Length: 381
Image (cartoon, rainbow, N blue to C red):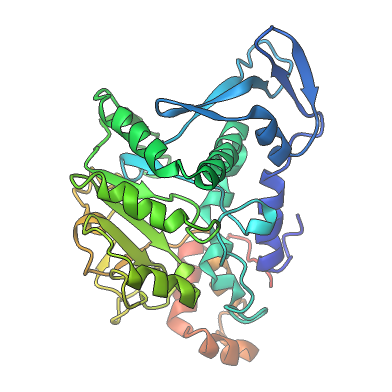
């Protein structure tokens, strides 16, 4: 991938890359013990696996092996619910990215919402964590998300999605031994440790959104209604489609279903949308709020912290729907701000107008440079 490519193309290429199978394909083991080589697309692989729900798992027709190594034990199922280590609670994730590339985020590359060469670097979806790191690195994660999406679509079309999800989560709640491993933190050098997963809280969409399939949002209204003792929180950018806001306003959403509109750009004020709860945004940790949000997420990046909701004793996103929140930004936005001031003696140079359009000033650039340090390479537009 060209490091100097514009952020839109860089983002789309990351999505395409994580949706590809290895060039050698994968091996599939059937119930008769026969091994088959599969070299099609990742989407076709998930269709071939024919996921079927058993309790809270999606069982696959074949066991998938990434390589011929005897150490590769493969995988033959995927969990319907995932465990988010930052939130220490169950979640439900779907593939990130635009629907044209297999994702479930309608507005992730909506060119009506950003301007190329001006503010696309700060478009939050272009800095999405769910198209990077473990999400993109692990084939089992990508297969699990795409298989989950396929299963959801099939159940929605059959009219059974709500009942299936209620049964699955009832089963999940009945298993009290759920724990989650908080991984080693190389910044704070905090060793890995385990925490009990808190079943009182549920994150809808650690990746994904609602408008990718008709009837999907209203199905979640019915699912959350069935579990009044659990608080469900979902972020969304689908409020940029007026029909979605009308739909939300026309439905009696239960009080335990927290629906927060997410800002489009890093540094924007948290959105306020009629019919939805208080919004969220992403601002740099050393910036003042300046009225853009009410609270900063304490589980964000910072020295000396354990970066999860449990250890920070915070469940504001679920418990305080009237309080807006800011999270630490992901991706290359900091590098972009830094490169806007390559010459420290002339911080704004010829880009003053672009910075003004984006709502940035010299202090933003200085803060970004100090965060990167002297020897960090600067990204070029």
